[in-house]
Length: 123
Image (tube, rainbow, N blue to C red; front, top):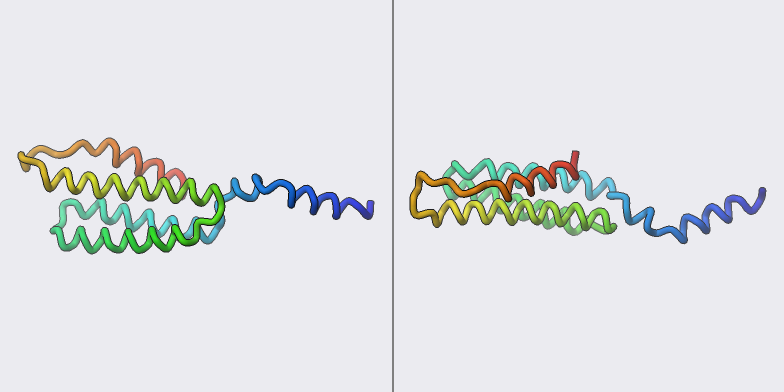
């Protein structure tokens, strides 16, 4: 019985995959903030370019902070979802700006699927 704690501690140390599969709480909170900032930038499509660019800069800053806190493999996976979502928002905005016909809206399917993926990670 005296060896049980030692064996348990050794087993925990030999199983880093269990720790790597768990999203850290600090990253999770920062990721939620980044997700809200990216959603705010996406909602700023209809606003002026100054408002959209300001929201985009805030999203970039919060994403950088969340990226610095991503330490485990699970953190990196969810961080990649956020980066994909932000990239899709930027791409949609560029497509809207370059559209020849202003009444023609770009296809938001890619952005919406990236948003759903990011939201599912931070619920």
